[in-house]
Image (cartoon, rainbow, N blue to C red):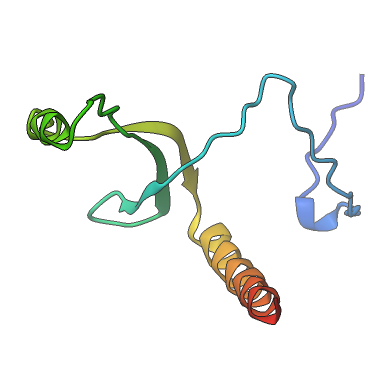
Length: 114
């Protein structure tokens, strides 16, 4: 059997392929109203962590304003449930920021036009 020699990737013909984005059936859409953006590790940032949270607003059940005030006084915090956590490279974050800026400017111009 002939021995094969590895060929450096720079010598291989490259082919551009389109992406085929797939949304799995089990994927759910979540609402997020609280977000934390971090970079890590602390000493040498090489990626970003995006944590998306959904606030779990407490139900205030009362018949009078006085009862409602008592119920509110019992609340010590509001739970923020993490619904997604995504780690991204700096290059992807930069691309996202540029696209989001363009999309948001378009959103504002459409909103103002109404």
